[in-house]
Image (cartoon, rainbow, N blue to C red; front, top):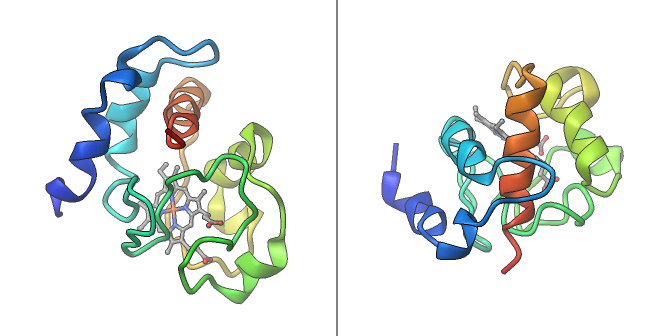
Length: 121
Ligand code: HEC
């Protein structure tokens, strides 16, 4: 795993500020499992697309060769759609290339989303 690929994003001072909906610091820790496949820097795709700015963008809109299933899914990522996808990626988007069983703990989930929402600045 290339630690250096996503570490700089985690060090941004602003991330340490408490978020209203979830705990950003806790989200960062949990996000490390996502970081195996996703970077948090713009246009820096790994096994999966970069998650920079993911909250608020349409599915399959990153500079990444998304699967046909993801292109067809066609939603805008927000707390709700990320929730559904994250819980069971392969059920929410049948045929997705994201072979990840899902993040089932909803507290963990809220924290990861709080963390992802910071990826705009
Ligand atoms: C085993 C590697 C892997 C892991 C672990 C993983 N992903 Fe993914 N992810 C992918 C791949 C590959 C895709 C592209 C899916 C497609 O195009 O069908 C993807 C797609 C996505 C997308 C859709 C992006 C877009 O541009 O529409 C989101 C959001 C996402 N992942 C979030 C996460 C989060 C949050 C985690 C941690 C809880 C995570 N992923 C863990 C491989 C992974």
